[in-house]
Image 1 (cartoon, each protein chain N blue to C red):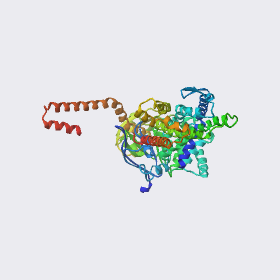
Image 2 (image 1 turned 90 degrees about the horizontal axis):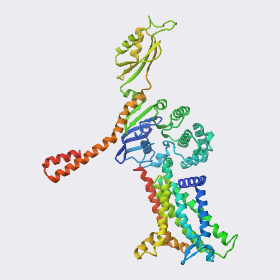
Image 3 (image 1 turned 135 degrees about the vertical axis):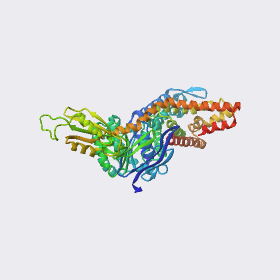
Image 4 (image 1 turned 30 degrees about the vertical axis):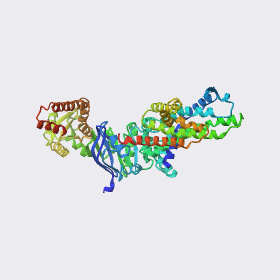
Length: 376
Length: 251
């Protein structure tokens, strides 16, 4: 089983000066997993990826890629992965084909292997039209495709993609995500993005980082449940237009439905979502992890209403993401002011202590206490 | 080793795919041509030009070549090696390929040296055109010419390594250009002060100056101390650029 762990990070930390970009993060990615690496800007996504690709070294902790340690065997680590850095920095003066050949040469692919791989990669990334063009003349979307192509050229078991879809148009994105799912079956993919819809579309699992820490890690459903608030959308037919009403008796009144839904155990709040005149949609917010759908369904069947729609809202990953990370942003903004504050205070403390010592006015016990406080 | 050559080949091709190499080599040849034929130099208290000397000698060329190299050619060739790659982020993609940092440095070093050597080879046109074909202005003593070229080549090896070192500490190629140009010119020009300065200080400056080391070659003397000096400068500078490239991991 442990053989299947392709990416392993244990207590990984990275500090830039006094700034902690990563603070003891732990995660594992297994073969065949596509993992979305999420987080606000500056959360440490790129830093993690750069450590995994041995571009920078961690200040603490262990990271292993395909069983190789990033400290001891950087070449083996890099051999087993394809990496697309943010914004696909390519050599602009080279043509696409030249670039792919360069990447293949550095990975020691034979010419015949290169031809075969290049053919499939060019097809997958849609580069046939631009093979002879210099990269400087390509749009950002195409540059990103070239970056992806070079990451795939040696058919690596592990792909690390830093915001691979940021410059693609919606069609390209969809194509790319489809392709990712396809190749992700026997490979390991770690991709970072801001776009939660992409994660939902392609990843089975997400890791959410914020301020250098992992705040959530697991299958998407679990993460959604983790916010403690699950949202259900129910809509019930409340009026008929000419056609016969298929429910029992007459269509219910709005207040009646609202009241009944509010009484379902576990529902914290019922809100109305504006739709059209004939039906009413309600938003139920629950704070329990229990699935409310059976209860809601049963209620509607018992009353003989016509149920038009019932689902757990799939958009909540966005809510989860925001609720997990937004506090940090707020803290970030305050940091500018507060970072100076404590530093100044510390200085003041030191000065006072010095004064005390000079004057030797305070009893020695007090001095010790101050020193202890400072240390702690 | 294979990676070094792949990187060197790519860099060399990149230089000759863009106008940079042509502008540098062409511009340098033009500049050397003007200096060689028209600008008189100081020799024995007189200003003499190539035509005034009345001797079959390439002294003029070897007087000016190091100046053109250090002012213009070496800085222009080395400025982009690491600075531009760091600035544009391409270094990240290159380094995350399965290559060692040392291979990146050496590959780029070889490519830059090759460009300078292409220029040096271009200047061979002067002795050939003047003294063998199509003109025979006299019978040239080729010994000092070859030793002069050896001197220039060693000078370039050290200079290019120095330029790469300076290029590795900045992200701007403009800054890299002027730093390299400045440092090389100072290292060269301090040689002129050796005779003016008193004993110990003059000796010390003579020891570090590229000019005093180079002069022997121009006169036809292969001085092993100078060979070792230039090679050591090159090695030290390469080691520093290697460390500076590696330092990205820890910053």
